[in-house]
Image 1 (cartoon, rainbow, N blue to C red):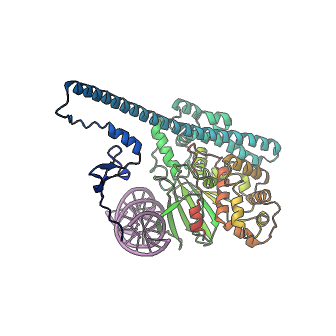
Image 2: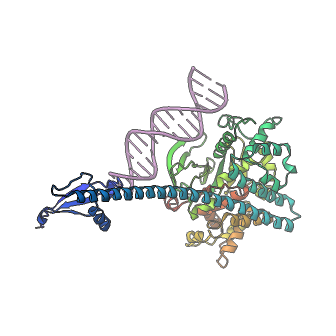
Image 3: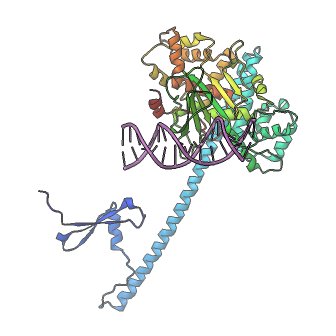
Length: 501
DNA sequence: CGCATTTGACCGGCGC
DNA sequence: GCGCCGGTCAAATGCG
């Protein structure tokens, strides 16, 4: 038999906070001469307050003297004054807190902006070194130069988006891009807005830019020089959101893991493909606009095509940083260049020549037929098997080895990735060489299995493909990244677990 | 029971 | 104007 508790327990809301979660229990103990005990999370404080409780009921005993009354009134006034003081202090502290929060947010933004700038500077320096050492190979060097050019540009693009001085912009518009030094370009308001504006001005070119099927005219109305900067910025951002990055990779999994958390919100049968297309949205933060589509290739169902769209509006975990700037990079690549057409882009230095091997399908393509400009990274094509075969031993530790890859691809700051990859691409010009290079650096001493199955396993590994895609995209996208510090498409442990099995 | 996924409905853009 | 198509929504369903 349990002892019966005669105490009545009454729930009371905490009126100080209005928080139901901080409900106190007021226990009336029948065994204690009807005394009321007040239990609190802050017993000491409450006790002190209880002693000083001002009921404002003016409950005075009849035998009080006039002097006692006056002294009590005085005390009450003092307490009221103290209370007012405390309240004022509280309000002041709250205001200060808000200010500090704002400052912190600004500091964060500035930090990211500076980081982007640093990245661009380091990239530029790196490219100069590569340029001098690879003077003979202008085909490969120039893309890197342009990348550098673009990187500073984009770092600024996102920093200054919406603030670009219009007069400055118009001035820049007068000069051709060839005449501009990278420094000038990066500092003279060469924003996406400007790029689009320039394209708009360049009406002599029939197809100024791949905007078939209504893009951008419908989604983003034409710019004119009299519109406000803010409108332009919004339109530009809308365009950036529409630009896409598509990654083709062999994978048995339903989705490659890229560091982010995704929630499936739809699935459709797309025309011309027996495999359904799945629609996912990023759930790492409420309101994150990033979407991705996953669909198997109609011709080869072992190939998984993942298309990213949008920019994350939240910081990403370290594991997700591998996909740094994927979509924003692509968007910037597509939008910041003054390419008259998709062919222009492909024939230009925007896409590293090394990515387009002679006699083999290009690893990077730009779709001009898609509704939105789409950059496609094809990780399924493997014109040179050697490096991949070298790359990886058949090992039960492979997944763990992947986790050792991050120091090169996943966990390092973007500029390291870009530097590494940039160096390598400029010197080797072959993505497979890149794989081998990474592998040799990372896994030196490991046995080498020279089998096609190994290569397939590597390319099929979601982590690897995602990381590789991110790295490549970082380069292709001129290492563009915005100052949110979180415009990355990446992968997450959850997805890794859920979707790779 | 809460959350994620599934799936049919719905909507807007585009071509005819 | 109509139908097709891609994309999204939201109720139903499944699962842990």
